[in-house]
Image (cartoon, rainbow, N blue to C red; front, side, top):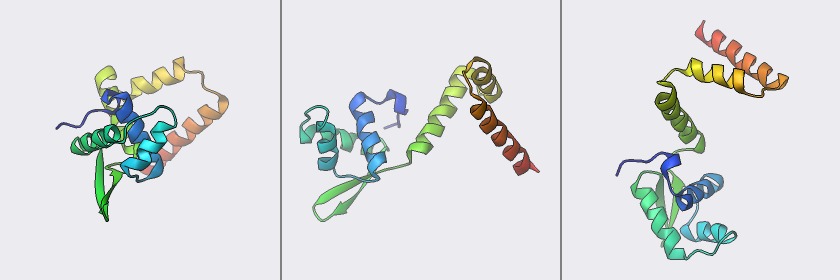
Length: 129
């Protein structure tokens, strides 16, 4: 099964991934308990979705006695970077400069934001030398 983008996951799938990312690892029971704080969900429903997420490459598991402990197959940051790359490729034909220009020209950037961007630019320049 081809791994979907985070944007293409269902609401429950996203919620489960966010919980597992936040916890670092979790059993399906732990995830079900966290989700049930907002809305009641059957344990078997959560388990089924987590198994599908594992099959799709989002989660992996290890056995702890008779319980599966699920971990994310990659970090939240890795998925954010991957999603951003796909977005830039799809919307801006891979042109990162246009994205940055839009953010600077259209964004409501504070002086602090502009200084942080300048520091990033300066650091990248030093890395190239």
